[in-house]
Image (cartoon, rainbow, N blue to C red; front, side, top):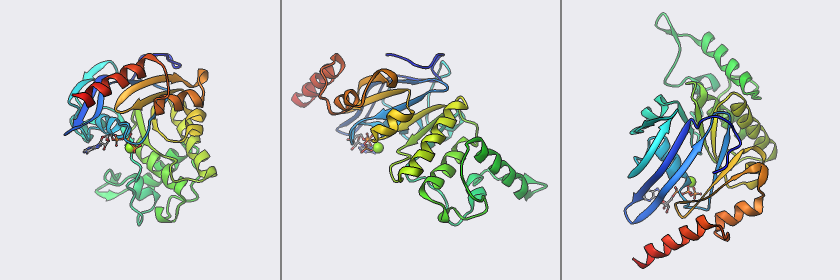
Length: 265
Ligand SMILES: Nc1ncnc2c1ncn2[C@@H]1O[C@H](COP(=O)(O)OP(=O)(O)OP(=O)(O)O)[C@@H](O)[C@H]1O
Ligand SMILES: [Mg+2]
């Protein structure tokens, strides 16, 4: 596997498998990401991307495989455990409360208090600090998130995810519903996260987004690894070939053979 970012992986996965009844969603997956690196996780519908993210987020417990954080083997048995290990996840539906303002959403469930009362001033100040750190364009932190644009809502969700000071941020299709300008804003945000030394895992179907911000691209196909590419030395055609299986590399040939064996069995 090639690397572009120096240093040891903050997250390293080897041989991870997960089955749902008759469906082998993930089989022998290897994956890693380093601090200050953006790794795109790509693959066709049903390739296993969300399942891998949910295994890292503690939503699904893998059947087998090893997961290490900062070189130490861990068992991520719940979402709370994943967060405790410094892993933040932004799901596609964002789970924001439309009726609350930006501050309310950022601090929901972890409100700052002073003398038993909510410390609104401190939360507002911290919200601005956080948004400035991300160079985010939000007109006011006191407007309900219902009145924000899609890109601004995504920004609030990402800002919320880094409030707990994580080491790893996973973003599931953060630009899927966005227009051109909003997409650029969110991609900018991904670069700010990387500049801040975070490891970013980005699920995307959009190859131009992937080529614009990722350092490496990890391709899943039919629940298996089908190549990892350095963005600096690959092209969209090569990645699409790995996604669709129209590639002649040894990894995919092996994957195809295993799949055939499974079908035969
Ligand atoms: N909770 C579940 N129960 C049963 N099967 C599941 C479950 N979650 C995922 N699967 C199956 O596992 C496989 C991988 O699904 P997954 O959602 O990880 O794919 P994906 O790469 O995220 O696809 P998409 O791009 O469509 O989001 C699919 O065949 C899916 O039907
Ligand atoms: Mg998915």
